[in-house]
Length: 140
Image 1 (cartoon, helix red, strand yellow):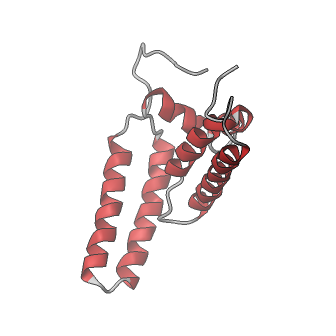
Image 2 (cartoon, rainbow, N blue to C red):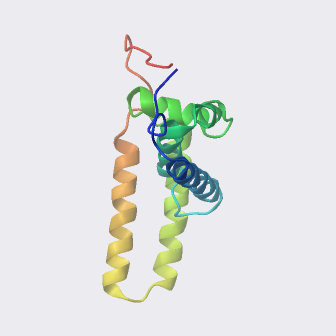
């Protein structure tokens, strides 16, 4: 069985903290799937990482989840973001950008938010859309 940070002499409190972080990240990921400007993938990755610390069953649930599973495994196999996810993320970022441009009046805050959206778009579009031919599938 896989050893986690909560095996052995670690306290139950540590396990509960990891589980709380996992569920908070899952909640934020679900909100990110609905709200423009709030990322989904980052929170799914955080949830998977924290779940792997103390709950292999919860980690497995994330890997097999209809909304998150394929994207999570694609990322872990090579930082892959499929075209549909890129387009969805871009639409959300564009909507968030329009909302920010209409609502934010402080130039420094506007510049900060627009820069963050720009960096997010660059990261998303710089990732491969599929694994290269002949690459090894490191799925468990």
